[in-house]
Amino acid sequence: MKKTLVVMLMAVAFAMPSNAQIKLGLTGGLNLTNVNVKDAAGTVKGRTGFFIGPTVKFTLPIVGLGIDASAVYDQREGKVDVGGNEQTIKSQSIQIPINVRYGMGLGDLLEVFAFAGPQFGFNVGSNKKIEEWDTEWTLKSANLSANLGIGLTVLSHLQAKFNYNWALGKTGEIKSISGARDAVGSAKFNCWQISLAYWF
Image (cartoon, rainbow, N blue to C red):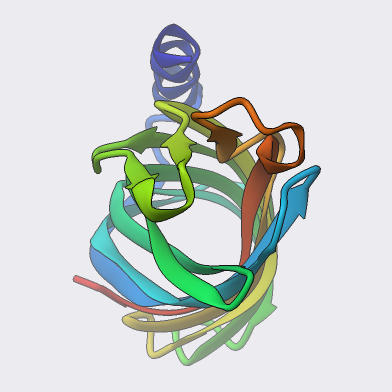
């Protein structure tokens, strides 16, 4: 996964024409997590999390076309309910979205755009053990997801985005320490994201 990320970032860098415009900024927002569970006892409900970090935007010399990338600290949570007993599981990671965007508008005054692309995640938090139920929750060390969304930029500096991020693989696994068959399963942390960014 790490080698793939390095290759992709190098490809993006070398693909940038010399006359491409580059802007740096800061982004942050909310994660409205939707936890999809498979083959596990109990239920998992999503909770609100957040993300924040630096971002960069490349505006290509093709009308309306650009690329943006970020490196954000991302937190997502879910509440596990087994037989009326509740515990919170938390995903803490560095997420690196790389999105292709297409926009149109009124020059520097206003731009409306759509975007899509892959997102690479690397776990920086610890695994959560739910010892009261003799089960263990284990997060994957790396994950891949995808983004699809829309956004608005005002006066070339203030940006708002709304998108859906869905996991392309398992975010983590739930297994029984005692070997109970009905406690083995997996989960995906998908989420709606609402964000603001400021371009310097």
